[in-house]
Length: 268
Image (cartoon, rainbow, N blue to C red; front, side, top):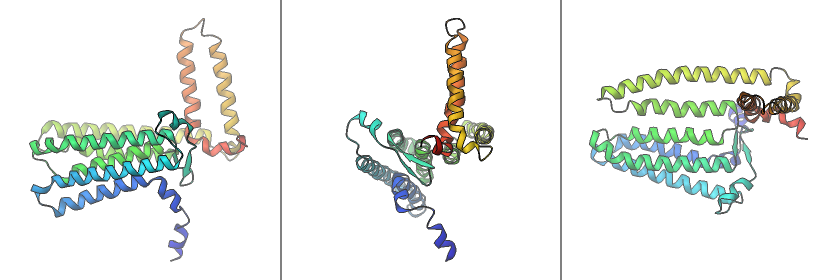
């Protein structure tokens, strides 16, 4: 009881409202797995229809969230929305997140609608296919709203793991099995390199407690100095443009990803 009492303070109902579309898709994915066991093979298409219904409910929830944030039916209103953070800053809902979450939901609906006839031809009409698409959609949606290195990495892995299975879903085809194995090996190495790079960035910018209060202005000062030095040489060295772009990405992208840890002092 004491453990349950302590865990209830980790998040509140407001945080769950921020990820309501993702929760709806997750429930629809689990329902697709259950329907695969209950329904006979002739009625497997109803699993696809229920998945499309879940995506429709998620789109309705996303639209309600957009309207509750003060959005209108104009595309320019996405840039005027004030961001909302949840789960202690691991998730941020703004115009960028709303737009890409809607794109991912529409893409998932189109993929499911197109795959119904394809799976009938291949005789692979199984509910796991639609469940994997929905879980991959959840990972992509969290990628659009993630605001922390951990949340971004977990979302990417959730999307990638489902893609590994989807690539090799047609088990009877040799090319599908080969593609799934190659994709798995490539993804495993890429995931390790990405995780190592994230740990290097985290250790470089937040390697000591004093850095939490000084890395914001220090990073911006270095970026401005480096940018001004290279822009003054653009008329003489064309490669300075590439160097400037690379330096800007190296210094500003980590500040975007982990800047919430060190922005408390220099935003006051």
